[in-house]
Image (tube, protein in one colour):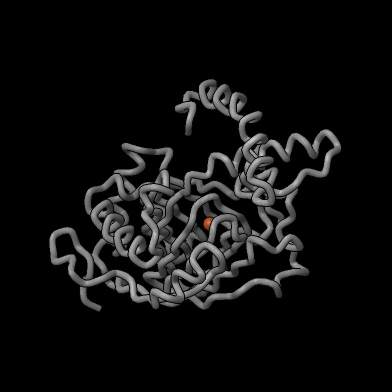
Length: 301
Ligand SMILES: [Fe+2]
C-alpha cells in the first residue's frame, strides 16, 4: 500500500477512515473499530524500528521495554521474563525469540512527532472536542511482538487508539463500567498504589468484545477499559496513539476512596456527587504534592 503520512511527503491524505457520528457517540464510552491508512508506511518497517530502538536505548533508556518468554494472560507486568539479550538482537530474532518490545515516546523523533500531530488533529475533529483543554499528555508508542505472544490483562490511564500495521492478533476489550469485571476496589488500587491492580477473571472472558485486528484496523480503548492481546502466529507491529486527560481530580478521588476503604468505609465511587468529589480531591491534594516532590516530579504532575 502507498505511503500515506510522511513528514517528507504530502500530508493531505487522512490517516483515519471513520464515521464521525458513530465516533462522537462512542468515544471514551465503549470500544469500537475503524480503519487507518498507515499499512506499508516506512516509519513502521523493521529497519526503521531498529534505528528508533537503538536511539531510544542510547538516549532515553527508560522509554524502552522488552521481554522474552511465555506470558500468561493473568501475569503481572512486573513478573514478566526479562530478555537476556539486546533490543537489537530481539528485533533481529523477532520471528522466534518470543519477545514483546515497547518503544515509548516515539514522538521524541521528529518523523514520528509529525505523524502524531497529524493523528491528533484528525482525532480532535472526529471527537469534536478542543483536546488542548482536556488533555495533558499525548504520545506514540510502538509495539513489536513475536508470534503467539500474549500481552497480559491490564488497564491504562491513557485514552488509546491502537493501530494494527503488520500481522494479525486478537484484542479483548472489556467495558470499563462493568463492575463485575472491574470492581471499584481494583480501580482504587490502580490509581493509588498498583498499576497491576486489575485482575483477569477467566470466568468473565465472555463479557469482552473480541476484535480480530488485521493491518489497517484501529480499535479505540477507553480510559481504564481492561484489555489483553493474543498475537497470532505472525510478527505483529502496532502503534498506540494515546493521550491522558487532565485526570488529577479523578485520580485524587480514587486515592481518597482507597484510603477510606482501608479505614473500613465503603466509599462513594467518583462521578456521583461533584461536591463530594471536590472535597475528597482537596483533602488528598497536599499528600499528592508532597509525594511528587519527594519523587522528583513536578508537584502538579
Ligand atoms: Fe494497554
